[in-house]
Length: 173
Figure (cartoon, rainbow, N blue to C red):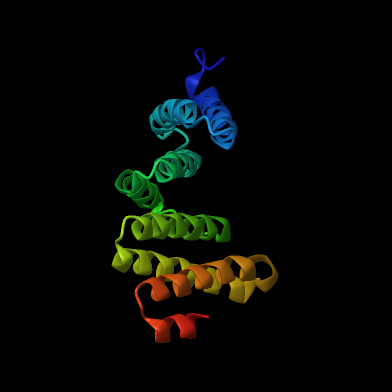
């Protein structure tokens, strides 16, 4: 079907590959997951022409998952590159609560990679941006977003501790 009508069916193929990659990642088959994600990324970028909005979200998820593989393999600069690309793709698309929540997740993942790479300044910036988004979401719906906001506050406080900024760490907590 995808060969006969690629613009209709390739997004479904891409989503299937994304899900397969998640399964492989969870089984710790990182090399296989990476191969599947790379194929999904190729398809996702190819289909952005006709299903622009959905494909951008899908592409950002694939990039996030590729970054997660690099994070696990301690390839932090490569992870930073993929998280950053995912954020750039969504730059003009962030408006709904769901997309804001996803951007906050990407920012948190980016912060973790910066921290693990020893770049505490950019880690702090990314955590603060994630926290800003999550605080605003929590104001509107505390039951749904407070736990994510609390997790980000905790991560930021730990980062301040690493930077030996005890006063900022205490304020964050």
